[in-house]
Amino acid sequence: MADDRISRATAEIVGIPPTTWNVKTVSWLLEQPIIIENIHKVPVNEKLLESLKKDKMLNPILTMNSWYPIVGSQRVRACMHIKETEPDHPNLLQEIRIARFDADYWNMFYLWGDKDFRSKAIAIWFQMTELAWKSIHYIHDTDFSGTEMKEFERIGDELSWNIDPKEKAKYNLK
Image 1: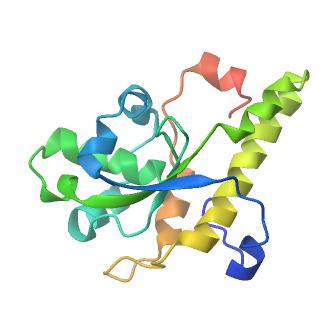
Image 2 (image 1 turned 90 degrees about the horizontal axis):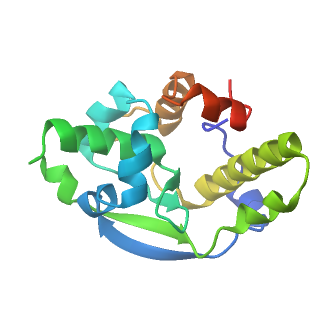
């Protein structure tokens, strides 16, 4: 799903909630409490890691109001790995473009009583938002070596996340 795209014209008619654009360094983002607490649940995508070491982050990311990435978690995880293994890597000082949701617009689904449906509705909301947002805001389709961004996303979709079994059950994850 993460590697899907729709036409920009179609994406632009989708109602994506408002965001505020920010320019922050990679290091600044990695220091946010929500990132420190949760990003290790995301597996390291080795091919993406090597690309980021060489080419830096090329496309913007989309985050929740808390700064946790909705679009870009694989890249943020790879950057955290760089920080942990090569703390002086120059790409940690890169300024990146971050679109941050002004509020947690998906919270309305928590009003729905059926927890199974609620979890599915929230997951669908995030996936469709990601699809439309990437289709509008991604500038680069490939890294500078010619690897398609969709290839990194396909690899990421196949990796196993490090999520506690109780948490998986809570959100109906496999």
